[in-house]
Amino acid sequence: MRFSFFISALTLATLAGSLAGCATPVEPEAPLFTSCEEPRPQVCTMIFAPVCATNAAGETSTHASGCNACADDQVATSVEGACDEEGSGL
Image (cartoon, rainbow, N blue to C red; front, side, top):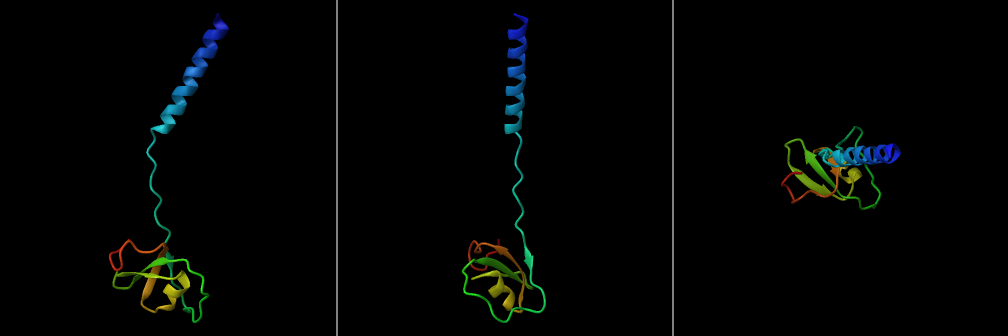
């Protein structure tokens, strides 16, 4: 009798611990910005991996790749993925 009570209590404690973990809110990950560095690229590959680039004025635009974005002297940073809408920001 004692053994089955112990197993039941242990199972209940384990279940409660598992459920408590499910209730923990998950923080969304912040986008990983890439800063353009000097010297700027002069030639880029034709690999299509869109990025959302931000220029010095804070305007955004989609470029074919991070290399293509940083080849533009006006671009300061980029983040993986196309912009939501052209010029609307992230």
